[in-house]
Length: 92
Image 1 (cartoon, one colour):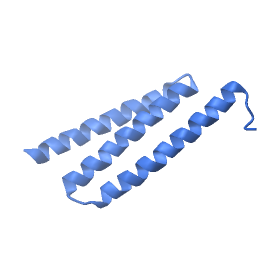
Image 2 (cartoon, one colour):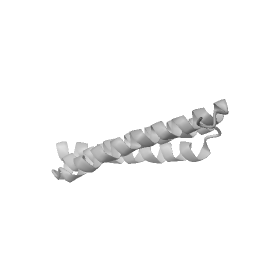
Image 3 (cartoon, helix red, strand yellow):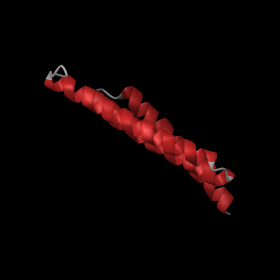
Image 4 (spheres, helix red, strand yellow):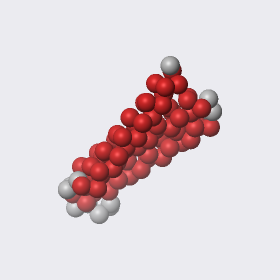
């Protein structure tokens, strides 16, 4: 029963990733794309964790942790870039 539930949850996360990808492509503003990218990173993180739990391999959890750290740093970098671009600050 739990294996079937984990498999269903993985398919649901995959569906959510497709929906987030569509939103990422069709977004009109950069801030909408940034939010969609951040949500997509969270969905991929959850998918990696579910995959690791379902297969009983901890390597997926290690990859998920590193992926989350780099995703957060990338989010901060893009948010700062967008903030500087909107305020007209050249980084001085």
